[in-house]
Length: 139
Image (cartoon, rainbow, N blue to C red; front, top):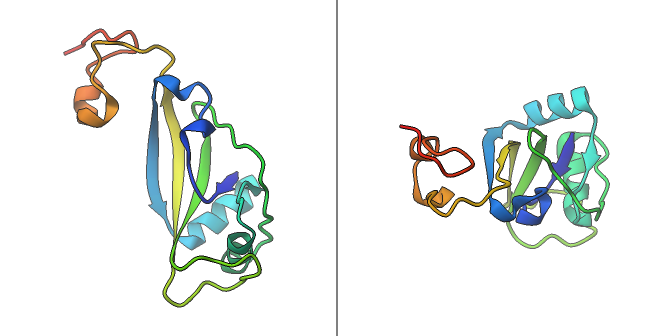
């Protein structure tokens, strides 16, 4: 399973029309369980954070600056670091820092842009579900 420290629109294949993600906060123990089950494919691009994650997860997390491409249905783990800037040789989580984990699934990638469909951010999920990919309303 891919492990990253950030998400960007460029990670999602064909997202120029929109993407829907399912994001769920998970515990450190659940992350370890998922990575044990599915294997670790590190896409953490910061050396200091990779070292911190190695210690926190008790498994080797390598710094890898490879492009991360995700397709519809794929799942990955995001480690979200909040705290003071990490140096490249840091290995411990600073006292005033927080590390949160999220299990993310790519639910939908839109391949058609519908001009009469409300933007994803301007409607509730229930309202968005009333439209299909062609922009036709289904009440």
